[in-house]
Amino acid sequence: MDSKQRIVSRAARLAVFSAFFLLLADAFGQVKVSGVTSLSADRQGCCYVVSGSSVAKYGAQLELLARYTSSFGKVESIDASDPFKISLFCKDFLRVQLLDNKLSTLGNPIFLPDAGALRPVAACRSSGNGMWIADAYRRQLLYLDFTLNSLREVASLDAYTSNGEQPVNSMVERGGNVFVGLGGKSIAVFDKFGALLHLFSVPNVTWFDVHGDRLYYLTEGKLYAQNSLAWSEPPILVAVDVERCAVADGVIYGYARGEVSKMAGLPPQKPPLQP
Image (cartoon, rainbow, N blue to C red):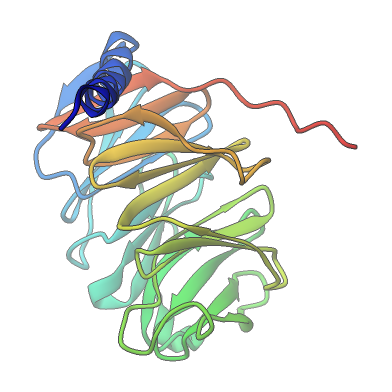
């Protein structure tokens, strides 16, 4: 390695270290939790921590507010975008359970095959009275309307993943659009009618969420933020050595080495100037 390469390599290491240091310096709360498998956050700044079949709700200062234990085994994912109608997706039992803001059950669990989703692999809440479901059997993005008790096909996923892989590993709805993680290789953005708006390639993406104009995602333990108003811009490295994340209004909840920490988020980007 020549001197120029050594300088570039050292600069890269310092950049990663600086990002991690800034994240730690901005931390203003942490709580010890073991075996965390999923995180979510609501618009009131509360954090929801899933460990297997257990869910814990923490307040703005990471004080424990409520607990819930699922009767249907492991909770695959939690969506607290509506803090008064939180959804738990239990993939092994093909069910969704809704909870209120005190983590008490809202009605009976929804058995998704009864609604027509035969092999659901991911689910998230909709801003309307319903939810989005990725069905690996149909290989489609579906919308379940709670009000009409109906299921409609929205978009085919065949064009974005091969038959031998799970088509979707995570989903969120933000700003009226659905962000879909496709096979851990890319994130697709669909409108509510199923039209593809953008396809963003991310190798080994394990988690993502959207807050305002920032797409946050985890890949190989690194947390990045992408400006969704200007996809051609390079992503910003926010932190390293992160296992799980959740994004709320102005804060990021991160899980690493047995602790959930609350950290300052990045400021929003300004929309690009119109020509």
